[in-house]
Structure formats: structure tokens, C-alpha cells
Image (cartoon, rainbow, N blue to C red):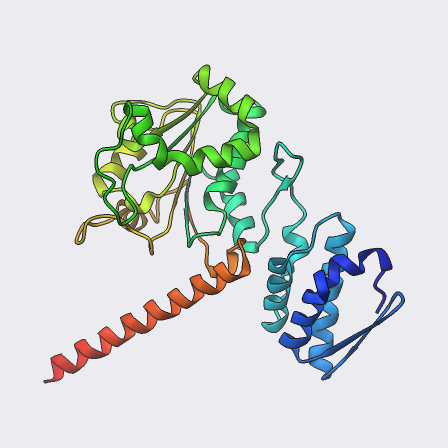
Length: 326
């Protein structure tokens, strides 16, 4: 097959790392002579490899920097012989960061999530770390704000420690809660730019606050994002969802495997998923380890923990059955 010379480095990766990964995964060998790429192996695997390279070449032609995540994702489709491909995901740009980098879905799960945000009034994005739940929600919120579809953006998360007690933090109330809200600030700075963000925050058009601040308010014509929703109690979740006013859109994100609530405390996200699953205009999007877009090692870590927890739960079930018999 043809591989234009100007796309070779991008498609093959640094030190041919992408090409070597494709060779190893599909058990094929690759040779490049000028613009001609030769692939040798079993007919089925050669066909798969051609499909992967075609997608990567097209991605490169569109101006994308090919990453290991792109290669892994294309390979996963090829191995499972699925019809979907990474090109259909790459078609849409939500917005650009302050540095000019396009923000867009990178997996089919992320694309479905973005489509749901566009169509539904309330969307729950549930999935492991690195799946872009908060970042994509933020990009959609900023885009809607810039277009005048909403008059303000409100971002909130429960102020709860991640498995460690931080004691009495110094400073005034805002300084005490800022560490909990830092990930939201980071995403805003990257997409909107620090100066624009601060100007809009001073005007009250962008608000970043702990969940406790939401009580007693009605939020009209706003884009509201609740992050780390797995750390809400059922009462907090109900309180938050009943704040929504006319012209508002809500995105709730959370990872059910990373709860920091006291032992025995039910998560508001679990309860919401059970109570609201059949309510019209509410969508639940479940992202998986396949949708992780951070370093490839993060994807492997998430999958390893998923497998470990599945084995643990199945072991407990077998143990319970034995106890019942005895």
C-alpha cells in the first residue's frame, strides 16, 4: 500500500514505535521502500493491518499528531473486526484551547457522550480516570457560553479528601476550598485562557464552588457541571438536581470505582443511576477503560484494576454459595 513520505514519521512514530506495536499485536511484518509499504503475514492479519494503517494515514492527512492512544484504539477495532473506526470519531471539533489545539472526542464512547450532552438536558458521564468526562463537559460548556446559549457556567464538586485527612487548612473560606476545585481551574485555564477566565469570574459569569454552596439556589440559563459525583450523598445529589432552572443544562461526572465517602455511606451517583435511568431527557453514558485517553499505561492500570475487582467480586459470590450449601 502507499504511504506518502511526509506522513511516514507521524504514522510510524518515534523510533518506529507505532509500526513495531502494530507488527507485534497483529503478528505481521512491515517494510517501507520509498512511498511503498509492504505488509507480510496471514491474510486476515494483513487485512487488519491495512485497515489500521489506512486510518492512521488519513488521521495524519487531517493534521493530527498520531499518538500511541490512536494506534491502540485502531488496533482494538481491528482485532475485534468491528466496523467502527477512529476516523468517524475524529470528524468533529468542539472548540480549540487557548494554544490553538483542537478539543474533540477521541473514542466512540466519548463521541456518544458529547452527542448526549448536545441532545439531553441532564447527562451523567460515568467512567474511570482519564476518559475525558470533565474535560469534554467543560469544552461543551465553554462553547455554549461563547455562543450565547447560556449566560453563565457553574462548576461544582463535593469538598471531600481523597483517602487522607487534611485537617484545618489555612486561609479564608475560598482558600480552604480551592485545593478541591483545582482540577476544574486547570481545565478552564487550558481551554479558555487564564485572563479570559479571571475576567468572566470577576463578572460572576463563571463560578467554581463547592457543592455545599448550591443549596437554596435556583440556577436558570446556566451550564452546570458537577464533578466527582461519586462522592456525593443521595441527599446532596437530590439537592443539586433540584436546583436546575429554565434554560439550563447539567453534566454530572463521576467514577464509581473511586469513592472517598465514609465506609457504609451510599453514593448519590449510585442512587441517581437507579432512580433516574428511565426519566426522559436524562442520559447515562458509561465510559470504559477503552475510552481512556491519557498515557497508555493509565489504560492498562484501569483495566488491571477492573479485572482485579471482577475476580474479587466473583470470588465472594462463590464463597457465599458455598456457605449457603454448608
